[in-house]
Image (cartoon, rainbow, N blue to C red):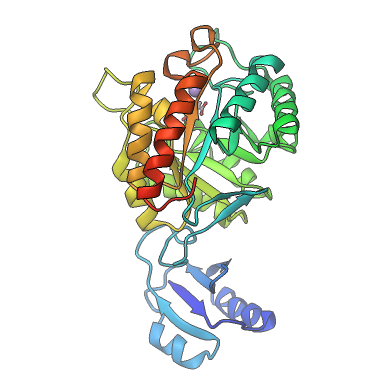
Length: 337
Ligand code: PEP
Ligand code: MN
């Protein structure tokens, strides 16, 4: 159950209202949005007379029962779409924000060449994995802390904000200069990590697990927001299916449904979704057209030599062409790139 409060209610009144519910044995989540403040009750609300609460509390505008398990990420609680700002970059609010860069940061030269080129092509955020979750323990595991240092250097040189994947909560301090912390598909249900990134004051890019439902993704986002961090970006990155000709299957309907069910911004990743370079541009366009708030695309200055995910990486010229095509589409979709 959620109560939407009248605008401009004094904080003491809100605290008093919240305390009243807690004394009755409910847990509460206070969601302070730009449009309104909402108080969610967690617990068995079957015996709560919603109309009576609205009638007897002059700070309450209206109340609703929420049948879904996800509350604070639910659009019912927070009608207006969440907008995330990272420096000058906006995610949400009619923007189509492109994140690009290599799967893995490999060297200063590599990341700088890619960063400068993708920036020129119109990417707004630089990605680069430093800690890599690899299926094989013998595969390249990433440059780790040194990789984050290289990413930081590329940020300093280009001014692009950076996003990189965190693998566990002990790494949080290392991510101090990382603008967006990525929780990867394999960690989508690492609940300790979700709670930990719920305690930081920067955006979290939460990728959908390989075999997780849309509802499970929303519940993972709920962990982060309920722990106090409202800045979550959801990312559809393909799910496991019976299909073997692609690495994963891009679930475009998830992009649409997530936007309907949640107020959080939604982006998609056609690189991990397909695993095949030639599929990336058409899927990227589809992602724009279904209404995503952005895209994360892997690029490399020399895909044939990439230490990770070369087969799905666009080279820098291919990325530039894709960006030109996306800009034309964005006009038709009334999106700002
Ligand atoms: C990545 O973005 O580099 C990555 C490992 O993605 P995912 O977690 O979606 O597999
Ligand atoms: Mn990758």
